[in-house]
Length: 230
Image (cartoon, rainbow, N blue to C red):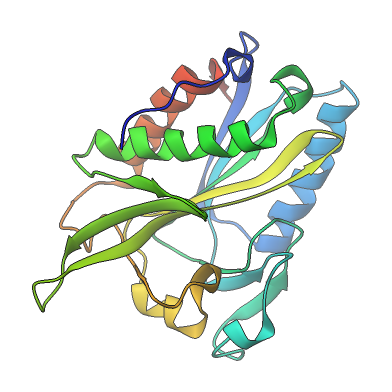
């Protein structure tokens, strides 16, 4: 798939605070922080922020979640989420990026914003020789490989789910580095049962979380603007 050209309004010369947490972060703690930070950004009292982190194993239900897609409700804690989308899994080995950007200064175009998040992931994975693509009608990032039967199979390697309040985004992306992929079996991920889930590890790519974070930083800055570590 060819690279897309983005509305230049998505890029900003203002620095975005860039935070990386090395410990597992409780989901409700993260949501509380995001909501407070988004409100501060909307009020003009804080800079935009991206927060990279990992969660303990859990499921979240987006605003379009179908209860039937929660296959094993007692497997992990389940949280109702205000983000768009359906059920998704978070856990160790998965890099979550919470993106708190002010779209009032970036064109007020939600579709372009989601495409830019997808491109951020696609360009990042390309640095590790992983070819990832969009799929029409399916938000997220996908890879293909040859299955055991010899047929080509399609799997999701990264998910996107965002929410906007007063044109400030929160929630964001998740990329499967080396999580336990069996944990996805407790849900129908994003409501899509006909395709599987992939990770860097399942594709044979040995990448550290630090290496992934460095690539995410470089590619975010190219698409959205400069960052400052906090």
